[in-house]
Amino acid sequence: MQISILGCGWLGLPLAKKLVYDGYSLKGSTTTQHKMHKLSAEGITPYHLELYESGVQGDIQSFLSGSDILLIDIPPGLRKNPEINFTKKITNIISNIEYSGIKKLIFISSTSVYEDQEEFPEYTEDSKPNGTSEAAKQLINCENALQNNPNFKTTILRFGGLISDDRHPITMLSGRTDIKNGEAPVNLIRRDDCISLIATILKNDEFGTVFNAAYPEHPKKSEYYTKEAKSRNIKAPEYDKNRPSKGKIISSVNLDKIGFEFKYEI
Image (cartoon, rainbow, N blue to C red; front, side, top):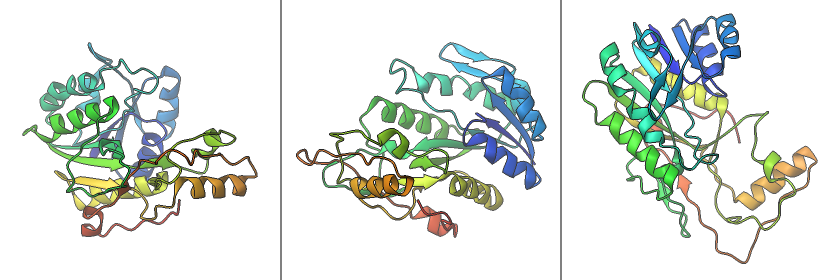
């Protein structure tokens, strides 16, 4: 079986390496020319592709050709550039997907599609996405455009905050003061669990559904990040206790249905 991964970055590259190990044939894209040899060295057929609002730069048809499954793992980039039309970037390639004949698709989305609120609501896959930020609205539009297309079956993966040993929010939060939402629960997931979940979806052929994915323990942000700072011997962040916190709890009913279990604590 051949899989094309659009976006071999922090998550996509180790995922591709795992899938090559599992016996899949892999094509992978990168936006940087110098990473092409890195993909090749891992047994991944490399493609230099960039998505723009005006279209795609690179040979996307060759990238998609012959693949059974497409996985899209492209960060929206709206924090750095709020003017980006991420929805346009994704919808631009739908005609290419249709032309390629790919019938199964995984789209990496985010739990930011659910709104933070003072009562910390619990959201499952049955909850209607209600995010009002620009990033949330664009992700929701992308999800809908892909899910509603009758030419392929799309599974949506809404990950919580992604962490690993070498990438953790505490490194940016350390020493900061007056941080809001200290009472809000965390919704995090380790990269290795993300990779295991995707492998499970592929193995079980779980297409045409939605999965929320965050580790099922949700300590307060202030407590969790203070503990993480102490474990690293760095300065703990300080939270503003005078403003009410907004947040949410991400839960899943669909992970239980496929028998997925988290292996890595946050």
